[in-house]
Length: 205
Image (cartoon, rainbow, N blue to C red; front, side, top):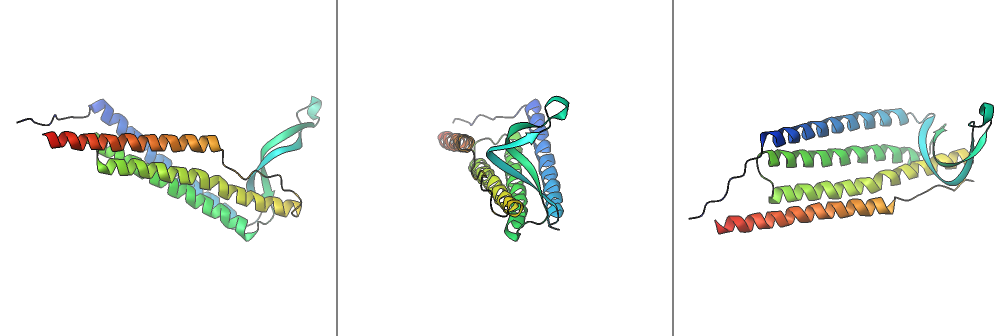
């Protein structure tokens, strides 16, 4: 009768995984604190700082001789708005909530995955679900966060320019999004195939 080979993760690999999990937990805590601070900062809706994206907008910067102004092309700038429209204000709040939910979900999924691996459980249905969940939620967050940020920026520009400025970028970098989608799909496929091979191997024992 054939017996299934026993795989045990090396101590050094286990230590590396536990360090990875500790760093992930620290990132989750830091993200939650930063998001909470941002929400508390904007809720009074007074002199709100908003990051605005530009496309082909020329501004002046004191970088010439003796601080002389020189024209530069803006890509982004921090705007201070006396009072944001309600929709723009809540876009910032929801943006921070999405950031926290995304980071916490991805970190928890990867920590759970790392814990399973330290127990020598690499390919399983649970791990496949964890990898897929982390990938899908990460992609949604990657697209939603800048979208909500652009909504807030639109509100800021509307207030500052009295709706006369509409040169704002409202898009997510498609190449980066596609690259992340490819990586997420690849990892999910690898774990799904590994799970199937593991199940077939166990069936032969």
